[in-house]
Length: 209
Image 1 (cartoon, rainbow, N blue to C red):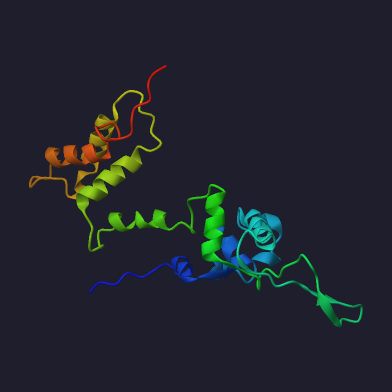
Image 2 (image 1 turned 90 degrees about the horizontal axis):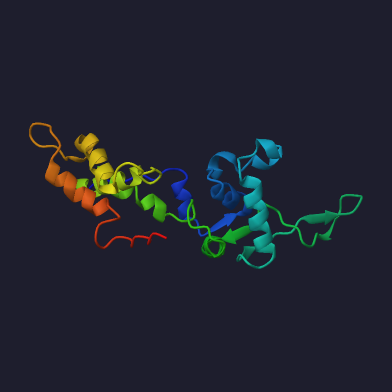
């Protein structure tokens, strides 16, 4: 039986709770394992892009009760260094934590639907993985062709033509070649139909003004 190892950053998906620092790094697309112990010691310009914004948003969400978790306030000391209480409205970044499910719900409410906390994006990698037990070459070909045109301006050719062209050029990567190594036109047409958003059953066309 084949096993599939998770990357270091994917292992953080097993956590039900994360510290403010960990959650902020993950939201910024960084692996906490490599940076959580020293990221706060860096000057803001040397911290990962987006980290400070994520930290500020998550911290205020937790303090405001919008995100569930636990706030650990900073200690207050007198001039002699004696502990005299907690500082209201503060939190210790490495000890305060958020509940992941609550954080995800809070992010969704603000229009965030991609990134680490929405792993549905990474599921795409499964059906593009040749070693996956449910791998389908034609499915992978159709998805890859569709993704390849996502940012393409189709000003001179139709989506059908663009998809078929891409599939012919990459036929060997998806077992879409015949015994002579030439592109299998039947398979290419089938995959192009699946990926073509203008075929019957796809998204409705916008009426011209």
